[in-house]
Length: 242
Ligand code: OAD
Image 1 (cartoon, rainbow, N blue to C red):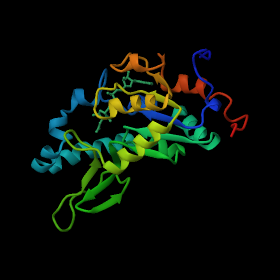
Image 2 (cartoon, rainbow, N blue to C red):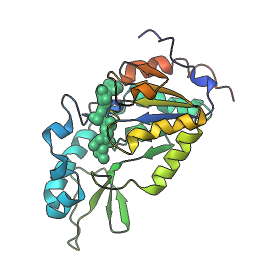
Image 3 (cartoon, rainbow, N blue to C red):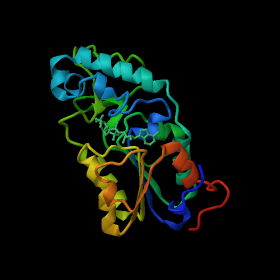
Image 4 (cartoon, protein in one colour):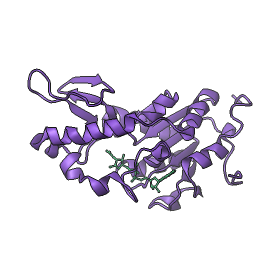
């Protein structure tokens, strides 16, 4: 893809936030939630992704999550994930704030990642937490209790410590690049706009318009992989200006 002249030069910014949604991982083969082939078209969240469903039927909820662990576990980070990790390694200060639960940013090498909606690979029970990429995950414990996916389900609150760190990064950045989110799930949908308080430049990368597109300075209608390739071109060649 020819470089869109509206794309900023990443080297001109001191603090960059990449704010990502399911479209970021689409090119890895992870289905999005909405639109064609979206997960919520096939699986009702009220039956598989809320606390009431888990309380009612933990086995069914785990069947769904084990299916997702299998599917996502077979996927690898795509070029876009790797370019963002490279940006973090090359530029002064890069943060990823993601709604994704797939862990692909970390697998690609990103280190400063805040997962607003939790992770498919962490489970919790009371105050205990455990990381496991086992598929299927054996969720019933010897004491009869169930491990619960440490995911922010519908109706749950976001974790305050994660939100605090994400908002700190967003309000202090001078460039925010939103990639592949439909911007319909709150409070995440509104968070990128907080970057305007600092006079940051806001860029949206998405093949489609979203409800918040009009608030962005630059909207690039393309896929994560192609636009990030153009946006990050040359990062491996020259060191960042510090
Ligand atoms: P959605 O499935 O709602 O939206 C995916 C977005 O990605 C859409 O706007 C698509 O146009 C765009 N898209 C698709 N392919 C793309 C590509 N190759 N490159 C760039 N963009 C592409 O996913 P989210 O906005 O992430 O919550 O959904 C938000 C939350 O809703 C998720 O975190 C999830 C879900 O319920 C939880 O699981 C807690």
